[in-house]
Length: 466
Ligand code: KG4
Ligand code: ZN
Image 1 (cartoon, rainbow, N blue to C red):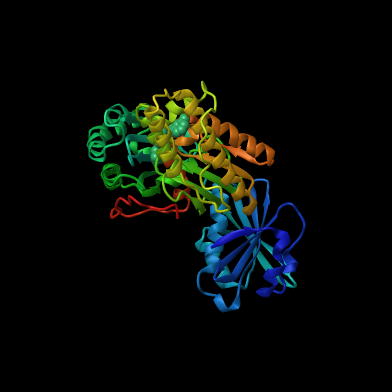
Image 2 (tube, protein in one colour):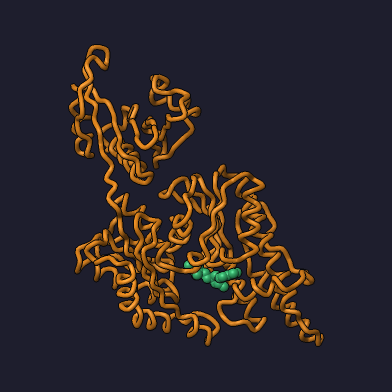
């Protein structure tokens, strides 16, 4: 794994290179990234000056040379330049270091000039790599649950078109998503939605750089409809195919209107997931906490049922809560030091309360119950996020997933970030629940890193965040 460390923390790298101090200075431009695999095996030091990068030194431990580590470090820097839309990367190399010059040429560097006597009497080449800033247009398909959605997004954050066929009306009749019905509905909608999105975007299929598709987690039958459509497009039009993790997509719902500063902590709250994820950049995710039973959205939907509210219950409880008082006492879930969540106990407590009040002949006040329930949900989410913030050092707190549309959760997290002097980001409401724009946004980063797949990809209903 390659990770950035603070330049002031370089001392421990003297174990692999005792001369590293020659390349360390206090300028705000200087950065360092190290390559670690069981132990530290190499590093790269570089400057970021306005919109260009300058490589200062690349070092690979003697024991690990010729294993491609230098190439990986360089590719990492090239990726960083692409993500940040820098203009170019430059470096100097001894004219006699043929091996290094060949590697740089292979990675797209060209010789720009010769610097006489650069290395104590030996000359150096100045080599430069221009960063390709041609716009990237991703067509993404999302069909993991009950929305058939297609988006076309430019450069990860300019949404050109989205077309979504929702099935909520159908599943409302059954009180939740019926998987078999969901996949049949996707089959009916997929070609219409695809055509509609392409027309709205004003682009032709030839203009599209790659086809992205959600491969999981989700309902297998639903996922397969999107995957088969994506494979067909990739095959017929000869486009790269990018498989996308739905949960990572949710996180990148933030990127569509915000420039996320890393490291970041993201709380993903949806119908199927409740997770705390730590990100050091768009490519490194670490799940540091999750629910041990029900997800928050699931808890909302089940509590909504006992209040005779239709699916999805979350938005309805949210609206009711604003008209009620917190007059019911409910248990705070899992108030321990772990970073895990638990919502099945809270769900049972609400169901028991409603039943026992009914037996006593008392009327439940739905607004008050909604208020009491939402207060507990918000406190439990904030409580665990604060525990996580005690452990990880971040610049940004993010929300993601369908439940992040919740008005009180958004407000409380905004306040938490302000108190902690951190950036706060939550997706626009239209990017909270399932949509293909967030899938396209994340696929853009995968495109930059050439994370393409062949036509053998399959649905992964239980895909994890890693
Ligand atoms: O992310 P999503 O669209 O689908 C999954 O991947 O699960 O999330 C759907 C969930 C549902 O449980 C729905 O009730 C919940 O998000 N939800 C809300 C709100 N809006 C949607 N929950 C609480 N408050 C809301 N305003
Ligand atoms: Zn989702």
